[in-house]
Image (cartoon, rainbow, N blue to C red; front, side, top):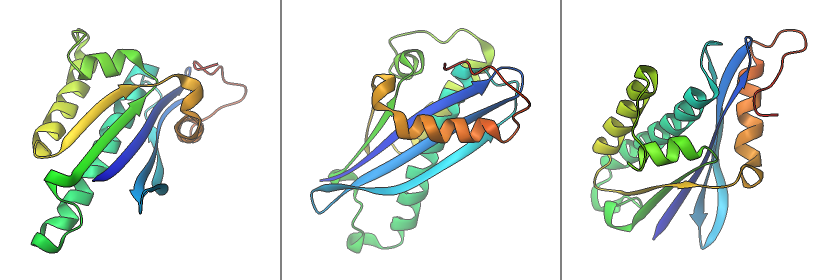
Length: 163
């Protein structure tokens, strides 16, 4: 079984910038090893919840790109639908519960972001994908990346909405 874990977080410096961060690791010979990490600078008008969604979307897009790169290899590909588990972790209870269908998505912008998640899930329907909430203190790597993303448009002395 191939396990690929994505840790996602969003960040918003109120009035100055927003960003998303994704840290992905995978099971390499039964030990988790870093695979990819990246930041996604967002428009300053994005709320923290919207930034959280953008991080989840970026993780799904990275997974989709990996799947696409393996498609041409056929049976020789190491990544097969029947042996791959993709887990997305986020410290946003709201996003995880909306994506898992536990909460309704009411705001138009959040609905649009959830539709993007749903579309990507549909493209990857052959694969086992889980969305799991984890406490903020267990999501430090993604948090740091999200803050970097939001700092690309930082002004003097912003107030960070994540504390």
